[in-house]
Image (tube, rainbow over all chains, first blue to last red; front, side, top):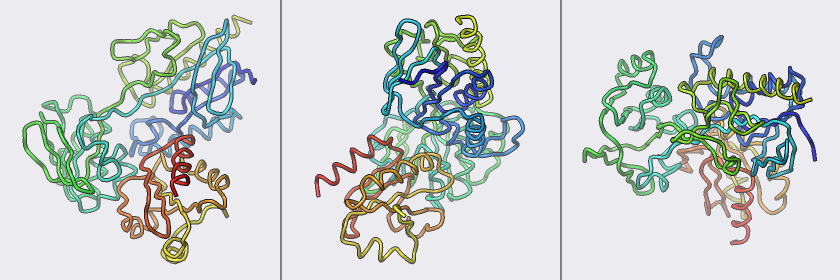
Length: 301
Length: 109
């Protein structure tokens, strides 16, 4: 079985930055990830990552990956099934192999939240989408709804407005307070976008494809597409058996060094209890986690 | 070449007149989940050689063919027999899930 100093679980901004730092601290490092670039890779436009004024999530993540590969850190695209702690090390079981590590940097990220309304599952790929970047072009001259009020929702609406003839943003609050004012301004100025506050989708209807949504206010709206951008929830199943301390909402509690309550287990990125969930903050946490792993390994040896 | 790249020119020969099983991966360069599934799809094409034909269709370069299949979300994998759709897998699926789905299609033929 291969043994590493550090195994990083997750291939988003936090995990990839941890890999860069870990490699430069000359720790024997492995990245295990089931997706490339995490949720960040699905972002259509990123304008707040320093030194890039305008880049797609996929492009930016490919640059992160190239830097990790340059440093000769292996990235194995395989799903991790189990992490367990054996004395002073961890055993990691993936779909392909088993590995040992002194430290784990867990950057499991988050999964997209579902609306949980009738029709959502049935019409996936038939009008319902969780990736505007992937699917916007299929809605040329159609009417679509975007659900949510975050940066992700507003940028999705802006992208969709380049193709669709009409874009409704449906948001359950009475104003946008989570999104950047820059995006809010662009959305408000856009003639194709209409904002509906204080309302929610209760049902997605159609025959073979989506034709209509029903709102909580009892209004019905004819649409051919529904883009769901209502945030994400932490992906925790892998560490269920490790008794990691979490917040009520399921985010991992970490200290300033990215340590969890479990010795040797560090966490970074969207899965942690940090207020700002951005690429730049995830990257910073990943760097800190790698530094902590380096300090701890130096001390242990 | 294990995976056939479909376009307007070869579509009739490769898909419509082929009596066997074909699985078509609808994708685009701007789609992160598609990029991720691409290498897995290539690998599986070797594994299932002789049993099922693997093909890719870029929705970016061939929008008319994509709309013929009423594709509204990618990645989408469409399984065809004798040119007729018999199954569809929408959204990213990890390798074990993909294999399981392909195996179940093969069993039910």
